[in-house]
Image (cartoon, rainbow, N blue to C red; front, side, top):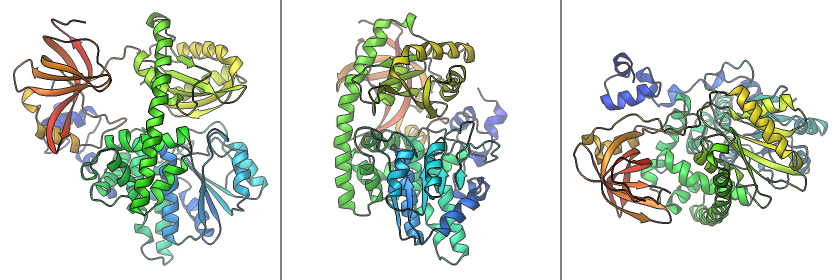
Length: 561
């Protein structure tokens, strides 16, 4: 529990909200100020002046943006193209490697493809920091490369013309958790200011027009929402709610049944993001990028409908793979689960393995790496971790003790990717387990949910639910409030395929409230249950009501199977 002084330091706000913010590490009222003036200064990001000058020097030349095939990469690509074109750049295009043909990042192969367009400058977004050979290939072809990235660098940096990355060694930039689109935004903001100083009227105001893209990419990439990122996300959400977002975001929100005027970070993370990601997982992320680039509302809706269809196909494929993965770990038995779980099937789709790793992690409560075939000899792995286990550091440790085992790897604390030879999978499992035991001997595999404690019964109402919704943006590193409490079950039923719909009453008395436990159908509960839940605003046929979104349910009395 935070101290009374910590709560008081947050100023004159509702005590319950103040306690929530203090529990999330906030220590001053200014940390609740999400105005753009609170952003870390644009000029404080290392190398940004040289990078901006490099781009401006190529204003009348051909620039190709090399993107990535996820939402962060798509929003970064759209942001840079929109800004440069608004600045008056006349020859700007993009190229994103197809994950099934070229793999991730600025590979030598994708550089040669780009070279066919005779570019004068390549700008990477959300990639490049690990692509030493790709930059070398570009240098050999006489094409300068500007890298904008946020992934952790390796021991050596690529020989690029300029590199912007808040995670460079010895960086003093105060917000190292910028997503790739956040890094791109900082570059565009610096270019805008420099152009304004050179007489291009209105240039400095251009990047802020696309903060909706920054918010989407930041939320979808699940980077920690420090104060700087919360400012970026909140400002983007305000633009979306005011109807000033790009048509593509508006169209996807509408297609997914979300209301633009009430858009919150979870709408971006669970409705917009997955639809764009699906294109990169199954087909070509350029569908998502074009959706974010068009200013034609009818075209945007057509793209949104196509993305929705692709996402439906993704869900079907994921469901099959998820069941197979669950069957494997369930048959293995919880007592035999290794500290780092690896799952693989030769028929799995490599674009979906990241999702499977996340699902198995939820089931096993430990780091998981899901593999699929990349080619006849290699596997592509996607890793998802738990709090307290830095998954890229684990892969780095494996690489250190067995340098020829992993072909390549990269990523963050919570997510990473790797490639290895199929015939060395068992060896990798062994070495990964050994390094887990060495680095994280006290890792918490319990799966325990940390809550903000009990929520007073009189706070379970629509007004407080709305206030929590509006108190965000919530996300990674700044989690939405989670509560715990005892409730008596009034009624229950299964809805959808596997969701448990409940009506419950606080054990201490109070009105009956609706609750939904997604993917938790099975046991039948009677009597008293203990819930870990989020308080949400549910809307049905235009009527709003408070609803408990149940993360965990435990019977306290009179439960039956």
